[in-house]
Length: 374
Image (tube, rainbow, N blue to C red):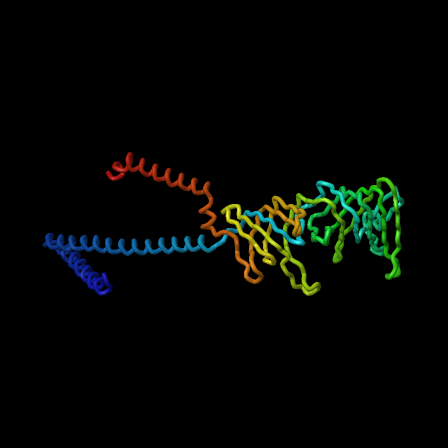
């Protein structure tokens, strides 16, 4: 009913209400009072139906709006934790350790170079250098550089601390590891080699050199303290394919500052394959495409040698993943709709819930429906 009709209807109701009161007060014409009462009862039922229809339409609109809003949300919003794996080929990779790490498998190298060392110990060839006294570093004494030349050198131990910034790079046939921010220590075994220890002197243009050549086998231990801003550089030549495993990282980047000192970074990716585990979708990146990931939880991180550079394999979870051409990166995280569509276990669970609900509702109607109506 429109507003005008409702006003007339309410005016008529008021008339019958007043008339019913007058007849009841007189007490003479009960049949006339009953007519007014019947009219009011019919009008009450009519108004109730009218308002129920209006309320029903209102709630249907509210429910429809909520459904559309929910569909829009799961269609447009991306999930917050993405399970994924990727394999990237790049000449360098940067990451920050989320746990302490140690070399799990030794490998043979040659022509080793390490700088910014606080101690170098090789007692067998009378090399003992340390600027650590009672656990603290003597900053008045300069750090040392260790060079070991030979073809039979085994890197047996290398321990890196949590929160260490790592930059792995390839330099022709040499692998270069930059370690920044936290201490490291290691051990190597050399056979028939030449050891050069360089120590800075008060004259900045001169260095004190200790040169030792030896036959046989010698163990050399080295350590560094926290190095900020200059990193420890470990450089060596490799003869066999190498692989370094069991890293746990909280951030991974494939970027290089170019030109140096400009604070402008370019992607070093040569190729990449990304797989989203929840949906099974796979993406391929081309040379110089960017891969930007945040809030990493690492299950598996490995770096190994490949023909085109360093092959980095990662498996774990991230909170955000953007990939693509610089300036046009695309959000690869699946939407909630994609996520639920590919979750077979969730689909089975909710199908079972709906089936059981329908079954129980049917049983209720069969056994208790008629008694409830009565």
